[in-house]
Amino acid sequence: TLAIRLIFLFIFIIPFKIDGQYTEFGFGGGVSTYWGDLNNPSLSSNLVKNSGAALQLHLRKIFKNRIGVRASFVYGHIKGDDSNSDLDWQKERNLSFKSVLTEFALMGEYYLFGFDTEPGGTVFAPYLTAGISGFRFDPKTIYRGNEVRLQPLGTEGQSMSGFGNKYSLFSGALCFGGGAKFIISESVNIGLEVVMRRTFTDYLDDVSKSYVNYDDLSAGNGTLAANLGNRTGEYFGQTDPVQLPTGAQRGGAFIKDYYIVSMITVNMIIDSGTGRRKYNNSNKVVCPKF
Image: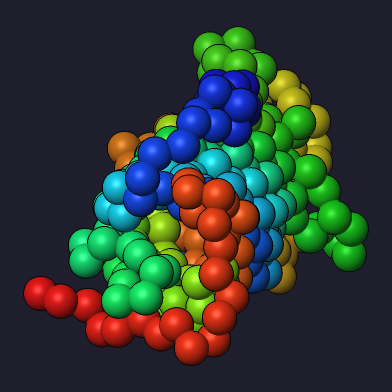
């Protein structure tokens, strides 16, 4: 993918040294949060109920104490469930999903007060970040006690005549957010960041456009696709399927899905650009100058 190629370019084509440059390796733990058609209207509820554990590895170069370039890998979990909503129509829709995300990203950073671990540098280094990513996802749901992959089913009629192909499980995203580093020593710093991903797909949750009539979907893609395309009958506890007309709104196709990655990171400087790293604890850093 493009993201992987850019990461290799970053690692192998930018090894040169200049003054004020740092090369940094880091890892992080946190959460990845889904934001899409299965949202609860409550922001706080979404942040708790739509989130799963996430891990991150990254390699970063900082130039002239101000501009950073970072390649990263993220492995995370996201989820969404209509049953968590406060809205009756959404509870009745009764859709749910969970997915694992694997992402490669390349992002630029701008340090507002600079980044300098030398004596007299900053203790607190906030930054803004933006870039691109490529990722894989695979929405699944629980049906009658079993985990079922949704994309192969075509729950919105995908692969049927007139409905187009199944959506890809690979997509890209625009990344934007910010964070801050707390410099512990000349070789170690702790980071905190929140970065939102605006994806190029509306199918993180397998929900985008319209319902397909139950009988038509069953005939075209099978009974399981029809049962999971429209789960309103399950909510009301009825055995007969709910017969909605083809074209009835199922999701919001005009807005793409998002996910957010929030991380606490540990970062280790492996090269200061001058070939020197100091470990003398007497060397202290000071607060940023405005």
